[in-house]
Image (cartoon, rainbow, N blue to C red; front, side, top):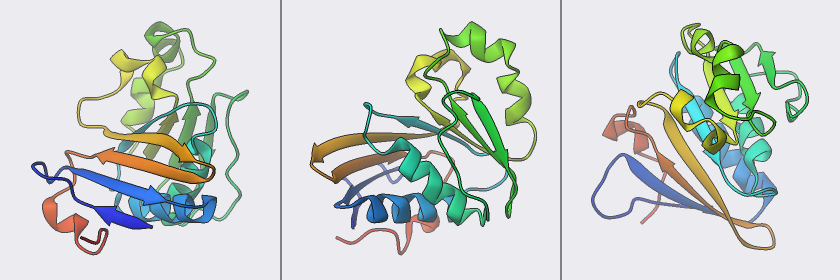
Amino acid sequence: MNWMMPGASLAEIEVMTSSPGETMLAGEKLGGLAPAGTVIALRGNLGAGKTCLARGIARGLEVAEGVTSPTYTIISEYEGRLPLYHMDAYRLSGDEDAENLGIRELFSQGAVTVIEWSERIPGSIPREAWIVELEILDGEKRRIRVNAPAIPQEAFSGLYCL
């Protein structure tokens, strides 16, 4: 896994992973940094590794039980260092569905909320959310771009190599 800080913005990092284990480790590092109330919006094509990254985030939050894709349940809740809400917006038709599920109430619970397929509900994602884009490069290789404006610069130390 190679953590890089691209040019201008200290709020953006790019991670290249070469296996599901490394993708999970990247998620674990993000989960370890996430304070209460963080919303992590995952974006990427089918098979890009969103659920794998979410499992890593759960590990970083010290969630003991196994995390599975909430495709059919829409929202799953887990206990850890902080509560974790894991949401899958794939089956939602848009922001109105998210609002009807009470998404804004989730954000006010002091938990970390991870939303797979967040691009399906763009108007429901808070401005301060961490946006994480996963891209399939080749086989198991992934490019993970993180835009996390709420993370102070010092939080990135130790997460990337030049």
